Image 1: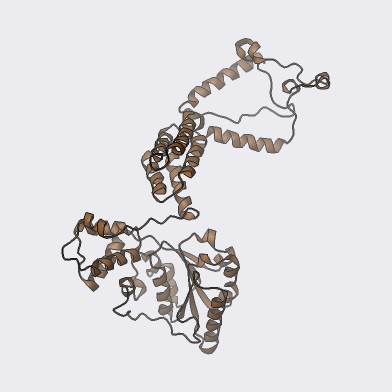
Image 2 (image 1 turned 180 degrees about the horizontal axis):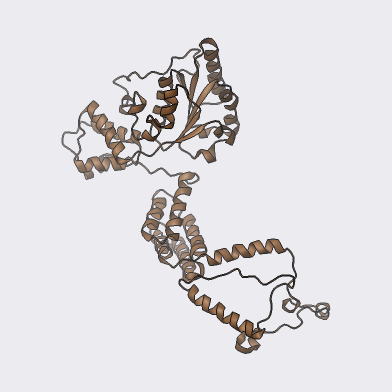
Length: 438
């Protein structure tokens, strides 16, 4: 933002920051091949590597978790192809700031032919109208847009903007990449005062965020610790990074999808893990209770009708006990669902019946099974010929219950698992009697 209001900002350089800068800033890579953990984007045969080799960048959106190198890559891209670098943040900038940035880029292009790489941090925070404002300047080549976002661009960015930019995905930094970051920090500042086990705990605590890891390391250096810390002492000294989780954004939907699929796949261990992930991150327990009920009726159904009872009981237990005790009831229901026999036969049957209901419209049921509450209705045939099943042999009349204009349909086909094996026997029994009555 410091160069936003200047007429002729200097191009990005890879010069080292001063000694007073934060450790994460001092360790910023000075070339694309120094970026750690994103080799799939920065390597010679990668999307970015090929663009740099050709000396021409296209607009792009860098999508990835915090602390994975989005800002560093944007800076290095500009330096790699000799472009002017300008940065704005959607958190602090408005339309007026963007207009000034576009005008400065236009002047530079007209005066010297140098193009501008406009880096927009947190680009998803701009509203739809503001995002549309980028389009003419991207299309005319006034700026090459590099946006950075932690949110799924499919949900947060305009389709028109996405059609003009490549979406490049940055990976969460794995343990090996984070260990390399710590090695770079130690080359600069000296060995960290940690045992091997504490070092592994420090890496795990960063949860894939390189910036957070380096900030933690800087805190350790500043403390001037003389004796190496073990995992316990490290835990007392530093805070663990809070897991990334937004209840109304992609992380929420990813985890609930994983929970549902683990239950459907009969993996109680994974299902418990995802349930715990969401509860630890602060998810509303009753939301999870509702989803467990949905799993009971969608993926288990008549294969184990007690699954629904278990889930409703878990919901009521949670409402009675509250957190944290009530969460155990949700865990119990989760385990029950994951270990239950699976069938989506009832789910498929209802969808098929709904489709048939929409297609057939307002067909009249057969006259014998409609009520006749008035004398006139009786006179015109309502209810005529109805057989009370309890009075029939074996409690089954075998009457036709379908509209006359409609051929009887089969929606529900039970599977040979769990209780539905018994249901299949019952259906076969009724069908045999129906054929005999016919």
